[in-house]
Length: 457
Image 1 (cartoon, rainbow, N blue to C red):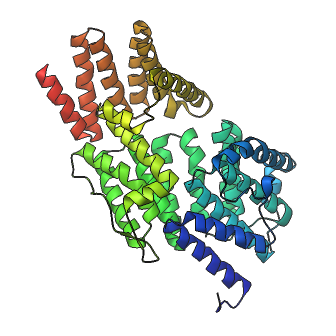
Image 2: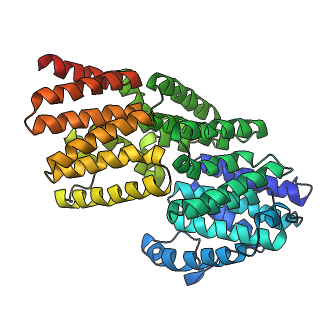
Image 3: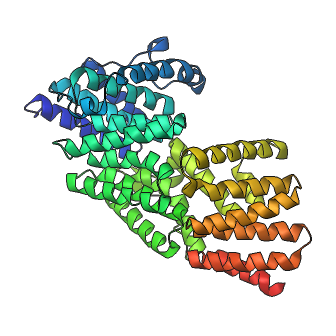
C-alpha cells in the first residue's frame, strides 16, 4: 500500500488482499476488511441493532431477513419500475472512483457471504449495488447487480419470468460494457437462474464460457469457481461419468496449483463419489493443503470452518449412501433425532416445490423429478395403482429430457416398488433397465451391483 501511486492502485491492492483472504479460508477476516474499506469510502453498511453486516448470530438473522432485507429489496423494486430496459441500456457511466471501488467491494462481499450461506445479507448487498447504480451511473459491476437481482426474483420468490428478464438484461449490459473484467462473474451468476429455466444439459456449458472469460482477465479464483460448477452440474445433468471424473481431477489439480483450498474442500466429496461410481480409487483425505499465505490446513478443519463445505459434504455423503442403498449411512448424514413422520413431511414439502418448479421454471428440468417424488409418495401411502403409473411417467420423462442418470434411478426405484409389493418377475425387468442405464451413464460400480443381484435372482 505504501508504494501505491494513486487511488486506483490502492483499490487494486485492497481487492487483491481480500481475494487472498478468501481463497485461504479466512472468510471472516475478508468480510471485516471489506466492511472497513466500504466505511472509509462513505458507504458504511448499517441497519438494525447498529451493525447488520457484522458477524451476527443466526437468531438475529432470523429477525432481520424477513423485515429489513425485504424492505430494501421492495424499495429497489419500486425504483427500478421507473426505468425501461432502453433507459437502463443507455444509462450514464459511473465516474466517481470511490463509488466504482465501492461497487467492486460490494460484489466481493456478496461472493464471500454466499460461501457462508448468509443469503439475506447478500440480497441486501445487491439492493445496495442497484441503488448506487441508479444514483451514480453504470459501473463495470452493475451488470452483476442486475443478474443477481434477477436471481433473487427467480430463486427466492419463484418469479421466474421477472427473474429471467433481469438476468438477460444484466447480460446485455455486460456485452455493451467497455470493461471485460467482470464478464466471468456476470456469466457465472446468470447461470443460477438459467440452470432452472433452460435445459440443464445446455445451460451447464455457461460455466465453460465463464471459465474462459476469467482466464482471459487473470481472475483465477473466478475461473476455479466456474470449473467447479461446470463439473458438479455435469454430474447432475447426466453427462458421461468418465468424462466428468477426468474433468474433476483436472479441476482439483488446477485448484492445488492456485492454492484455492476453500474450493478444494467443497469439491472433494463429489469427486470421491464420482470416482466410486466409475470404479476408481478415491482421493485420500487431504491433510496438508497449502494456502497462498503458506499456511497448511487439513481438509477436515476446512470443512468444519466453511459452512458451504460442511453442507455440501453432508449432502453428497447422503446422496451416495442413498444411491448404494446404505440407509444406515443415510441416517448418519441426517438429523438422528428426527423420525419417519418428520422426513415424510419434508419430502412432501420438497415434492410441492418440485411441482412448482416444473410449472414455473422448466418442464424439461423438473418434470421427471416431480413424477418420481410423486411415485415415491404414493408408494409410501400404499396407493399402488397411482405409484405404478407415476414410476413409468418418471422413466419416460427422464428419457425424453435426456437425464440418463435419473432414468436409471427411476427404473431402480420402480424395481424396488414391484419387489416390495410381491411382483418379483416385473421388478427384474425394471432392474435390468436400471443396470443398462447406469452403465450408459458410466456408473459401473452401481451397474455391477445390480448385475450381481440379477444373477442371484
